Length: 63
Image (cartoon, rainbow, N blue to C red; front, side):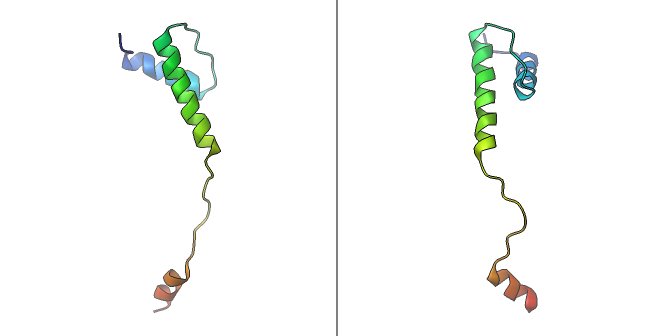
């Protein structure tokens, strides 16, 4: 039986707030683990900060 949108939302909240799942249902735990893995992958990606300036954009601004 597929998870209801209500249950998916509750699992999402638990995963994003680092709460335990409290359920042994395999579908729920698989969804919980999927969200936790996606969050861990996002933490590993570098964040680009600032504005990148290239020489060609500066030349166009001068004209």
